[in-house]
Image (cartoon, rainbow, N blue to C red; front, top):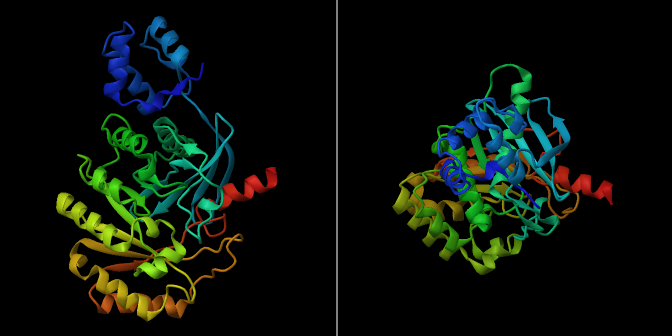
Length: 353
């Protein structure tokens, strides 16, 4: 029997499961305390839970469904984890030390079908969605790493920007968000959680209607349909006009600032002309938008793309600023350890084959 990860259940779902299996509802709270506060690695460690309940849990659930295959540590404190799932598939998770806290970037799918032409994540097609428990376990793996350092540090921020398109795995994503946000689990505040999407328009509307107040980031990377369709296939299905209708709906529901991610590709999308087009595109929502300019991390499989020259990055930034657009050039982390999303996984699978 394939057992599911215990981390895939919200506390309400676990309480219901306990009752359905003849157990007291309060057992769910006891189990959660052992899982998230004491961070046990075996059900047998739960001292105040009776043997019958422990046996029932062992028959139906697993605590660990991920194994660390590779752990790369950067000079700047970034740690990249290559994790193997129970079915043998490989994913990546990254711990980043920021000035505001410890941020973890999680993966939501094995591979990616979005097919952005510059991205390492989409080199290998999507194999399957991750279950909610497999996403939660990525946070737990990082937290256990931090526990091992003995400094009392905790994961404070989460970005859902790893391998895959998060909104394409909507139900598992939202379960994951509810679990990590829960005050008796990781207690990561909604304002400290960001979900990134390449622009699946129907799911943006659905995401806007959720009662969760987490942040949204949109991978834009081009300010017009012709260019965006060239580098991001999803734009052919959901062009910029449709995307921005959904974004404006999101803003009307949440009144929360939205981030636009823009990877700068040399002589592709990094001209002053594109910066001016981007500023015009964001003009109506400039008070609730923020542009994250990202220097490109070259990927060996995509040799047609190069990192923008420093002077072009600065010109692009200055043009946005002059037009009243809030923007920042993203600080680079982990450049010495396969920094681009999906690079470590791709390299590992090449070696295996």
